Image: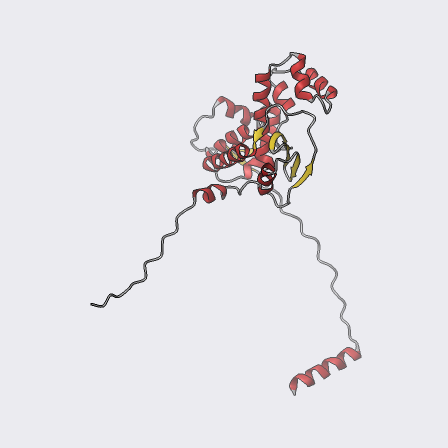
Length: 274
């Protein structure tokens, strides 16, 4: 009996959960992962923010799109602004602002750690957003705030990806995250929550989500969550950026009637006809 071999059918592609997860808004910084592996100390500067590392762990993060720790602490009376600035002015390489704040006795370590971690993850979300420019790391550069509770890089990466996924599920269009916000006229939208009403009260066609977060003294990511939910409910929209102006056309080149050029063209035509 002759056995006839058959080619097995091709395997169906299996969706890689990690790849699918990272495709929502892009992946995190490979440079940051490498710096964590080598236990580097310094600052990773990116297009939308910076992350400060000490022995491969994140100790502080900053972004112009996220309210600073001073705003989060003083907006709701957790810490007097004068106490904050006194600690900043007295900070040095040996004792950062965090140590000065704790030594003042005006805020407990637990409260300061919670607020600082919230600000760190908030700024890291924007600092690690996909960008068109490469990051730059400067070794040995510390931050005047000091190291309060270092965070492993993989924890920062996981939280950043989790936040990207959450925003994508709420409303897949990222335009409201950065563009000026406008009120919309919904037909039958659910009533907003108290937090969302506070956001809507500041929507004026000029402020962005980051502006509103800073005005309310809230973390920027929490405000993005409210903004995307309001966009999904049809209660607000975003102003599209103006088109990029095109440069005016240059002057037309003058017509050149040079007998030498005319002769060269005739010679070219004659050679091509051979």
